[in-house]
Amino acid sequence: MRSSNPVFSRRGFSRDNGHAGFNTAPQAGAAAVGTQGGPYAQPGTNPYAQNPYAQPGVQGAPPQTPATTDRMTMDDVVMRSAMTLGTVVVGAVLSWALLPVSSSSYGLAIGAALIAFVLAMVQSFKRNASPALILAYAAFEGVFLGVFSEMFNSRWSGAPFQAVIGTMAVAGATLLIYKAGWIRVTARYARIGIAIAIAFVVVMAINLLLVAFGVAEDGGLRSMGPLGAIVGIIAIILGAFFLTLDFKQIEDGIAYGAPRKEAWLAAFGLTMTLVWIYIEMLRLVAIFSGDD
Image (cartoon, rainbow, N blue to C red; front, side):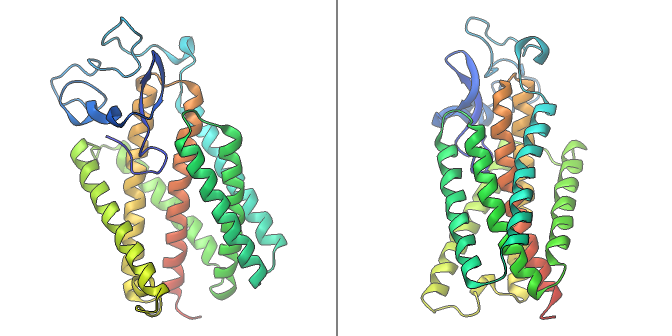
């Protein structure tokens, strides 16, 4: 099973030539779907039967302790995530403070968003994590979010702050629900959720084309009315779904002995998911705030 997060969608935590890492092979998630071992093994099977981090010749061996093997820990993920998200915040604050609301600022924001997208795609297709690339992505993403947030704040005062609180609430609630075991991240859960996510993206792409060619007015499904609010809520729910898959992916990576450097990829994926939720939350706050 893979996360629908752009980073995790093509990389499963798996072993490559005897070393732990994100594997780019299409069959990386095969063990997750079946019932023979792997991190998503069914009850009653040996959870280490297909440990993706088992060393050659040690079939089914349980993961070794992080202290002796330099494996990824939750502290590593938290630290890298804080650095990546902190870079996004710094970029956003600086662009908000230094760039006035104007057409030129909007153009700069679009340019920053395109650069961030390209950097994200490059990192997604790289075999190994590049901290410099990830932090550069975060910086340009922050510039875009700063201008984007200032634009909303100029019309709906306080909307960005409310969106930040909302994003934190969604992420915190999702983590609590996940840790409480109320959501079981299984292969079937992932397949259904990813199918819904793909359908959502396709519909949004079609809507964008209809708006661009003037067939749909006022943003179509992405309008600032009730229909847009419903779409925004669906998008936020999908963002929470992405988070559950990311949490599971990270949890399994730690349990199965992913190397410490992979914490950067985990941070990268979490950052993109939180940015998704924030943008949708910002639009939702604006919709419920009306035209004031």
